[in-house]
Each structure stands twice: as structure tokens, then as C-alpha cells.
Amino acid sequence: MTPADVASAVVAAIRAAVAAGELPVDAPDAVTLERPKNREHGDYASNVALQLAKPAARAPREVGEIIAARLRDQPGIDSVDVAGPGFLNIRLSQAAQGELARTIVAAGDDYGRTETLAKERINLEFVSANPTGPVHLGHTRWAALGDALRRLLQAAGADVTSEHYVNDAGAQMQHFGASLLAAARGEPTPESGYAGDYIAEVAARVVELTPGILDLPDDEALIAFREQGLELMLEAMKESLAGFGVDFDVWFSERSLHESGAIEHAVEALRAQGHVYESDGAVWLRTTDFGDDKDRVLVRSNGETTYFAADAAYYINKRERGFNRCVYMLGADHHGYVGRLKTIAACAGDDPDVNIEVLIGQLVKLVRAGEEVRLSKRAGTIVTLEELVEAVGVDAARYTLARYPADSPMTLDIDLVTRKTNDNPVFYVQYAHARIASLLRNAADLGIARGDDLDPSLLADERESDLLGALGEFPRIVAGAAELREPHRVARYLESLAGTYHRFYDACRVLPIGDEAATDLTQARLWLVEATRIVLANGLHLLGVSAPERM
RNA sequence: GCGCCCGUAGCUCAGUGGAUAGAGCAGCCGCCUUCUAAGCGGUUGGUCGCAGGUUCGAUCCCUGCCGGGCGCGCCA
Image (cartoon, rainbow, N blue to C red; front, side, top):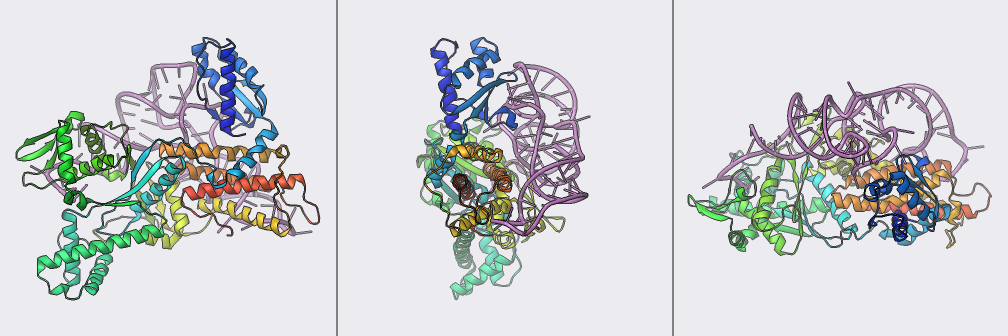
């Protein structure tokens, strides 16, 4: 019996009471159930009686008793107590509880999937690193979180497109090209150019690919370096992200907005909504209509479009591609954008609270040898995705970066994460999976196979009951994490599940010792262990972390 | 000045209005001739920044303070 089944039983009980005229309320479509921390409060608890007390004009405990009386008749329910101010403390029969193991094994990879976001078409934009430098640590956090979120949203039934915006237009590309050219000629880095070893490497590669490039006139050489440098950088970015397990569905070029006329189209679309005007020779968007502190320029007096105009065109393009939700994942240093993006949506006639969603994440602070390392692309002191992966591996990197909420600043201590101790929770979770895999191998060696038969009532130990309860939470955790856009909830859940499994393992022997024969209890526990393995594997997969068979 | 984020155990951090606020690390004491000890049990550790408000009930929601981080451009 899953928590959803229990919730349905509670709803059914309330409906029955309402139908019998015992409760003068409209029966709710759904009730919230929680897993009490205290075992004495039952397997599940509901506060529904407290909530219905006011509309029913009855005392909460009285309402609780009415519901409890009906709920006790529902199948799989062992007992229902009304406790404290009016909580319903629900206990399941052991068979109903144990049956969950069969449900999970039958669902396999699909266990945890729901349809809670089935109607959503979501565009998820993250990383969007400038192609003027390598993917650094800050981007890497977004890569880990964003890709986990993509997987989560899909598990919740949403139609998701992951997207990486490429800033391949504008002044920074000129600086980039000039920096490459200077490096190739052995000249110092130009004013406001990019430094760092990668510049010299890319420059050398460009020279290698295009003999004679250094003989071109300055302006042509700059363009050639810029274009080939861009291509090489994009290739390198895709490669490092792919090595990190992150593949974007779409790489969207800013330049394509300019070349396709999308910006003019967007300006006209905004004009049609009545928010565009001309002043001082420039074209403005009246964002103050929607609470911005000043209007924004779309087209400068010299005829050039602004970055803001490109942002607007990009947003409008996303909406025209049919996405009802455009999710942006931005670093805290870009949070000044939030208001502007929201006003773009409002000016386009959309609902900024529905069609656009901006997730702001605090930056990663990096500590090495007890001292903070400043990240600066221009100064060339960068910890790149590759460097991080080389130090700790993909699994540890992805897991560590995804286990904190995006809006809480995190400190990543390179020395600490480099040390492969159990300071790093990913090992704790993976170890639980490897331990199960080992146990299942031993079972096979002993000639014990999990048969079709399961007597769920045998899973009666307190540790087994704890484990079943934890396994039952998984679909709700996934749906909740997807809805709240908080992948870290999955990681925290897995840590807690791994702990529950380790305690079960410690208390409940699964395989027979010596020449003992396998029993029905052995069988039942093999079902439970396999169910746990499935949930651990599914959860790790959502985070893009491997579930090892051996460690 | 305006705006966003944060303040929870010695440290790093969880906690979507529920019952006695949790985990890891650090510290102390135990458990391997039996399924992986990368594990388990026990123990020490709290004015949930402060003050009001809403509520049957607030770490959570609202207001005001205090402390810390970040951002404001016809830059990208």
C-alpha cells in the first residue's frame, strides 16, 4: 500500500461520512499525509480533521473520531487513533505495508515517476556560459543542478527541453578574438581582453588549423581568430559538459536572433502590445508599466540593438516555440535580471508569475588550503569543470553540487572533497547500493533466487517497517522536488534512505547462515532488498550519479 | 538609496503551518571467525539573529529592526 493509496482511503472515509450526513462539509479531493517522526504516532498521520473542524463547526477531535470510524473499515488499515489536538494516527496492516515491496519491484525503473506535471511544456535554460572561456566552477554547479532538475521534471511527467544560450554576439566576442590574435603574435593581452593559459592554447590551435592566418590584415585576422576560436570553445564546452553527463537538447545562438530578424520581430510584437516608444533617437520599452524603476532601451540611437533586446527576443522566441514555462537558472550576480525578464514577459502580454520562472542561485565559494580562491576569468585563475572532475570524479562532483539548495551559498573545500572519506555523502549512498548488489550476488551464489512468491506480512520487524515507509516516500519526494525545482531534496532523501537501509541490514539478517535453508522470510527480505536497490538506483539516476555494483 | 538572498549545534548544512527542531563532520564510549566496518549503536552539543503580528498550532507566513553576502549602466 503506497502513501497515495492511504490518502485515497482517507478521502474515501471522509466522503462516506459526508454522504451519511455526519460531516457538514465539502469533502476535499486530496489530503496531506505525513510520515510521523515518532513511531508512536502511527505509520501515517493526517491533520485533515484539524482543517475540517472550522468548516464543520465541530471540535477537531470530534471530526477526527467521525473520520476514524469510517477509515477503520477501509482495506489495509489496521488501526486509526485520534491523537493530540486531532491528528489521525494511521497504522497499516503488515501485509498492506509489505505489499509495497512488490509494487516497487514491479515498477522497476518507473518507480518514482508521476504525472503531476504532465501538462507542462518547460524550457529549462542553464549554464549558458560565455564561449570566451572554459566552463568554470560556478557553471558546474548549474550543470549539476540544472541537469538533475531536467531529469526530475521529466520524472514528474513534464515535457522538458534543456537549453544552453550562447553569447556569440557583441563586444565580448571582439575582446575574445583580439586576445587570441595577440596571444598568437606573442603580444600582451589587450585592454579588457581575456587572459589565461587556455587563450594561448586556443590561439595555437587556430594557427595550426589555418596556416597563413597570421599573414592576414589585422581586421581579417581578428575575425578569423574570433570565429575559429568560438567554434573551438563551443566544441570544448560541449565535450566537458558531455563528460559530466550533461547533454543539452538545444544550443541557442544569440547571433541567430540578430540574423533571423527575431529581434525586429520581438520589437514589433512588443510594440503591438503597446509598450514601445521612441525617444532621444532610441527605441524604448516602457517597463515602468510593470514596476521597473526605469524604462529600458531596445535599440540605441546609433541603430544597434541592446543586449536587453536580445533577451526579449529570446524569451519571445521560446514562447513561440510553445513553452508555457520558461525557466532560467541564474547566478546571484545576475539577479538584477529577474525584474527585467519578468517585465519582458509582462510587456509581451504574458503572466510573469506563470510563464517565466527565474531560479537564482548563490555562487559557489571555493576554498583551497584554508583560503578562499577568487574566481576570475580575466585573471585566468579559474577552477574548471575538468579540474574539479579530475580532483573528485564526476559522481562526487555532481552529487556534492546538487545536494545543497541553489539559493543557499555553498562553500566547496577542494581539499575536503578531494579526500575520499565519508565526509562526502555520495559514498554513503553509493555504498548502500553496492552493499545490496553484493548481497544479491551472494544470494545467487547460494542458489537462492527471489521467487514469484512474497508473503508481505512477514516483513514485520521495526527496521523493515521503517524501510518500507521510507521507500514509499520516494514518489512524493520526486514530485515535490520537481514542483519546487529543488533537486537537493532527492539527495537528502537518498542519504536518509541509505541510513535506514544500513540500520535494517545491521538488524535483519537476509541470507541464511552456514547450512541453514532459505525460508519464506529470506524470500520476503530479498523482495525488500531489491525494492531498496531500485529506489537507490532510480534516485541516483535522477541526480546523474552512478549506482555502482561494487565499491 | 532601491532591490534580491542568507542568519538553525563547535564547523558545514537539512527542515513545502504540525506532535519531543535533525544529519554529517569534529569530540568521547562501544560493536567485525556470519550477507561489503565506506557500516551500526550510545553519548556530548540549541534563546531556530531580535521584537511584534496572523493561527488551534510559527524555524516556516506578515511587519519592523540587527548582522552578513550580492546586484544597480544607451556594459556584456
